[in-house]
Image (cartoon, rainbow, N blue to C red; front, side, top):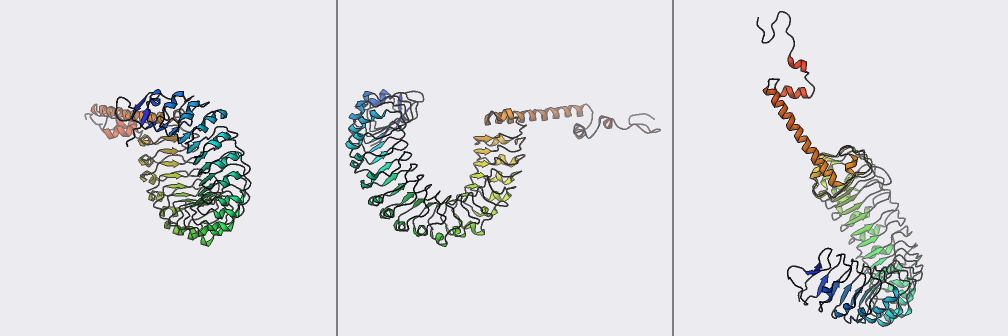
Length: 560
């Protein structure tokens, strides 16, 4: 069955079908009228009786009209990010509705009771509604919910009636006010995802082990000092974020979670990598930033499937040699450590695409990075630690590089080879000592962002506007003369126009000079080269007239 997508015209509530028909028929099942600045639901939509899915998010709709009841077949309705204050009773008559999103609306909580009439609901999203509590009638009446989104509210507890949600698989409670883990969740045995990030939890109950279907568990940014041993009973667990808590150790029995693919431990005072982590063969993402590490275990090299590793903000004084064995690594963050040198075997990380080295103690540019042929993003800004004074010309070897961050250094010039990097899109040179840009930079045609603020620049390359893809050019806090500061402040379009005008003036000046010299030559005032030298101030007008003849010798053109 084909589904036609309908989009609203800009600034108009009138809906047109994509690609053709002059009139809308009632045989339409999907409409996307999001991001159209609508203030009301268009009548054309309410007339489409066979509609099954409607997207009206991110508009300015203030009310749901009673006519919504005509959409008897609607299954999905997204009304998030509008201006709804209340819900009409007719919304409760949509007997086929399975997915409803009312997030980011100023809805009065008392009007949410109408949602309890939607007995077929499987997904309900109520993010950022300033809720202090969930209407109990919703928990009593809706028995088919599989996803319940309540993030970014002011909830401190869940009603005991939440235990009726026996089919619930996903619950999102991020950014609320929970101080105690909701015990009721531990009897919802079908739960696969629990998100309680950014609350005030100080403990997780042992009963969490009852949730044997649990796969993803998010409790980052809480006040947890320890974890229950019973977590090891959640044998299907694959993702766990424990970042930014008060943990000093992790229960050894978590080694039994052999399906783990991602774990976040950043922001805890572990000081050592938990030994059992190196026994998880399927681990792909590991966050160990700001954990007080001074080194890695020898067994760390066993994590051969690791793709993302965050070791930033630790106390590493050397590049851990174990990392060179992680051949599948794609992202490596070593920012804000005390590393002074990179190993010669760095090139063995042949799949590495992103390397973060900001804020270390390199005495000079670490040229070992030039062996990373797949590198796309390189971070070498030195907001703390030693400052780099130059970037080698060999930077041009990184032909795959898309983003180069070298801000907060003492660079006085940039290498010419930047112009021969065909994929370079972002160049961040802020807070350096640059006095001029190399003209070769105009050849880096893929550049989209060029960040130059707080340098010593006075002039821009006259052909800089040949960077046709450049969208961001920052020049604040430079002693700019050409273009003048006033032009620079107006943005990239004004700068481009100024550069073009200067080129036109320069060409006109050259033409005028050429015309003048030609005229002078024709009138016998000298050769072209002599006039050119005279223009440069190397031949004076007196020299051009020639020396006076010596006494007794006739001058040129004089008779004896």
